[in-house]
Length: 150
Image (cartoon, rainbow, N blue to C red; front, top):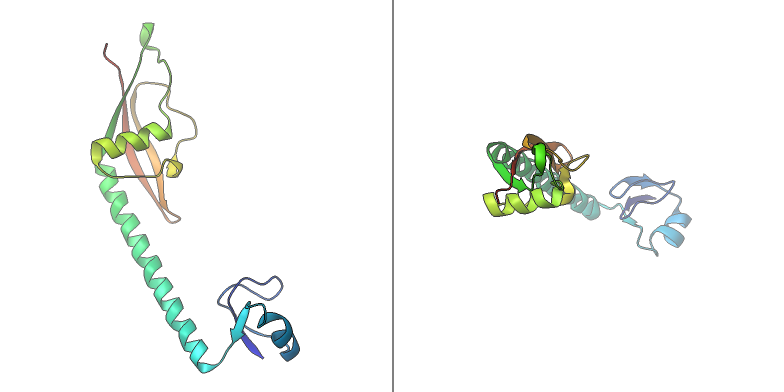
């Protein structure tokens, strides 16, 4: 019997796969547990439509991420931290502060977890920080760290 998997099943396949299983296995295990459904014409057409819709949504998300990455390259976030004698910094700039500064200065939100910052920034200057917007798209954001006045 051919079955369309509704969930990932170990040793059978991934969600959306069409697999051939024994009739008894399908009737007694796969179908009652709602792990799959019979692969008849109606269900196969529904599966094709779902896959086409999922591909369309994924393509739209990728295009939106690419457009946002282009916009982000033109933006710059300016953050100030305290300085001690000799130009040394007190504290550092973390991804949370970069995300907050970006929202305040540019009016756009990014998730602090998506900012690629191996270590907090502990010096003054202009830094290019990566932002993972999509599994295939990483944007670049300029972060200017200046000395706090006063």
